[in-house]
Amino acid sequence: QVHLVESGGGLVQAGGSLRLSCAASGRLTMGWFRQAPGKEREFVACLTWSGSADYATSMLGRYTISRDNGGTTVYLHMNNLKPDDTAVYYCAASTRWRTGRRTGDYDYWGQGTQVTVSS
Image 1 (cartoon, rainbow, N blue to C red):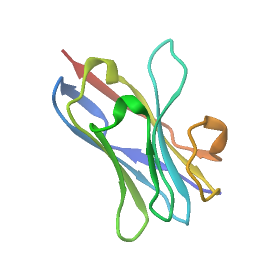
Image 2 (tube, rainbow, N blue to C red; image 1 turned 60 degrees about the horizontal axis):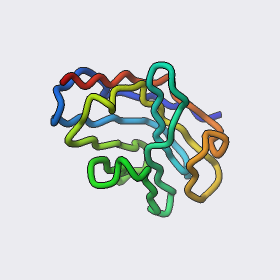
Image 3 (tube, one colour; image 1 turned 180 degrees about the vertical axis):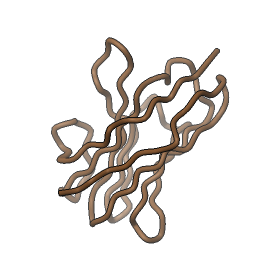
Image 4 (cartoon, rainbow, N blue to C red; image 1 turned 90 degrees about the vertical axis):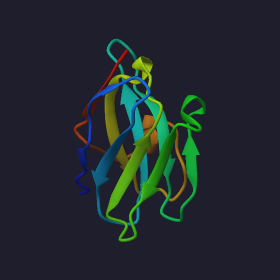
């Protein structure tokens, strides 16, 4: 069983930045998804244990996923935030050692952290 603990959400003005954290142990592929009110959960970014990263097209250049040297925490650095980025952001973990964009690619989920971007 993998327990994921997210942190770092909050309220930020448009153009600002936030860093989300997700604590998890193990050789896992880690992903970030988000879900806005009334919308389906959508892929944001993922990072394999070997360091391969994938991003949703709309996040390219603004979001960066990374992992600390100990491999216990995964970060999502979000820059130039827009009101459309407002959502609950979820951390997910997969025991499959490859990138994945579907929610079904992940075995474990965090509780979510709210990100609100004001205009």
